[in-house]
Length: 317
Ligand code: FAD
Image (cartoon, rainbow, N blue to C red; front, side, top):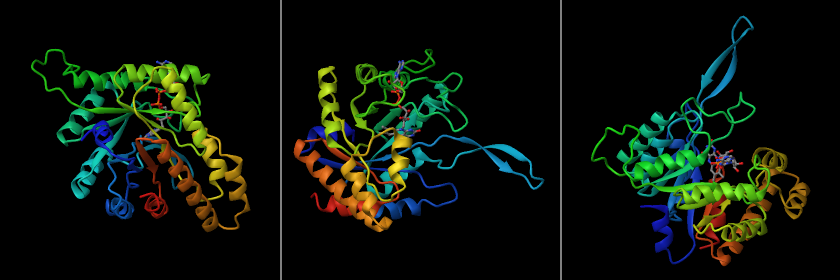
């Protein structure tokens, strides 16, 4: 079922989760163990992130280095199918521009259709570790908007090979990313919103936001989107703080601010167990306020902390 159908049929705020594919070398049981404590909350859908290949330098026995390409977390599409099969829940694979040419993208979308997957979250992806700025694959897409148009074309039965006749129309429900604190490459919020609107005008059905820790940023973002004529559902993405290191890692990696009330409380903590308690209380307060505001879905980035998230969601229902 499509994310937008879940939303339109809901009587209350829905719950959804985002998970990462297991690290190469681990079995899928690691992912099931992660999801098991969360499934009692009957999420409407589970997102599965996509991780592209990266170049790394491996040290040889003689001390020299060899450049190798590795993919640490393969399997997004098959993991979606496995989760659907095991838990009977809808899944949303993340699909990125980086590392794909348009033919590979088309084949990936066809495979997702064969697997019975109704949703995709369309993203550009970040620069690869060896790049200073995002580089599209030769013959690939530069921006999420271009990838989105390819998905919208398939939904209209338009494939890359225009000799194909009587083609099957896919029916993907298309999500895109939005940034309450602005995407870090955008010169300003207005420009970022213009590009977000272009994604919606090209067929995006809903937006999921980057994590934020200050609900005021989300409320202002929704107001700005509505003023810009963006009228699709805007799903807040939420993540807990659980270690002191995150005070520097999160702003650096995701280009977001942490409110001083939160960072001051974290700094007072003596252990990461104490930080986890502060993080859970903050997440619960954020979730309660967003629910009262009437958000369509509370979407949790569960990254390694399913029990913390489960403890928070339990207090919401
Ligand atoms: P775009 O919408 O293409 O925007 C990128 C930048 O270009 C923005 O600054 C925008 O303002 C600008 N822009 C957009 N269109 C144009 C245009 N036509 N001309 C000029 N400028 C333009 N990354 C992964 O690798 N895997 C994942 O699974 C993943 N999941 C994510 C989930 C969520 C909810 C979010 C918020 C992010 C996720 N990311 C993921 C990270 C994402 O790939 C990065 O944030 C990336 O830098 C931008 O992706 P985007 O889809 O927002 O890009």
